[in-house]
Length: 293
Image 1 (cartoon, rainbow, N blue to C red):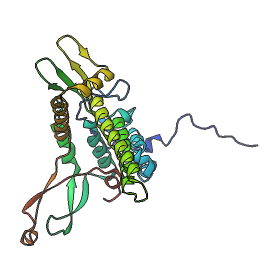
Image 2: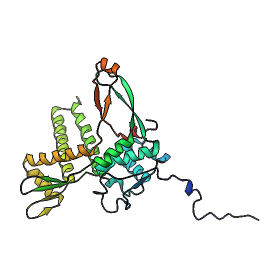
Image 3: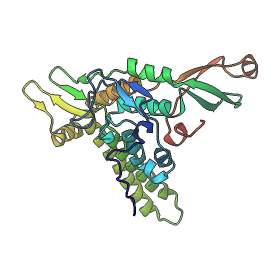
Image 4: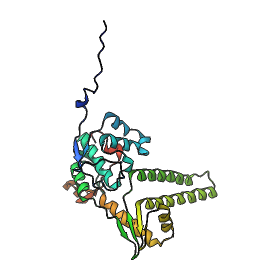
């Protein structure tokens, strides 16, 4: 007589699956995330899991990296509290990626660079916990920009979707610009391509600024309509445009990862290197999530 084994109702391997490795607080505190894009517990501590084999493979797929889908998939896999990583504000992105890296590979990371002047290649160990603490505790975003006595502009961080789409459009425009160097093209065609590319870059920059503006307050009304805001920027004094741009640039600088201060060895200084120098920290996905890097 054949014996049939009934499948268990729940997976008996569940307790052996990955568990949260660390818990983090977001630099934004949850602000600027739209409704239903993230679940934040009362204690604000969000669990972070290590990457799976599938997640690691995602970072080796160039197309998925370029269009941002790989990053979105990995974030949502490693931080289930995040339901829509496309909506992740720029202020939180670096902290999230660092937390996933720590959960997967540990707290220390080797970074290789060349010493200024001597061009010697050296490797330093970077404590990612310090970077994470820096981002969580020091990031701030002032949303109000006083344009004049009657106008106040309210700005917000761009989300990952905006950043990715802008990067793709910029890449395509730059590739188009390279065609200007094609000797087989006539001068008229080159001028046509240049004008088209220049117009595209101008439009990208303008749209990026519009996306960063949440509202503009006048003495009588608060304007949130994007078309009205875009029309205002296109017809306002350049000083207004520059003031908003400079404020956003300053906020991005304050919200970003500070460079690592490196102290050169006596031998390096003797060879002409500065006694101390700053090393920018890049979270390039293809390198940052490479095992053993």
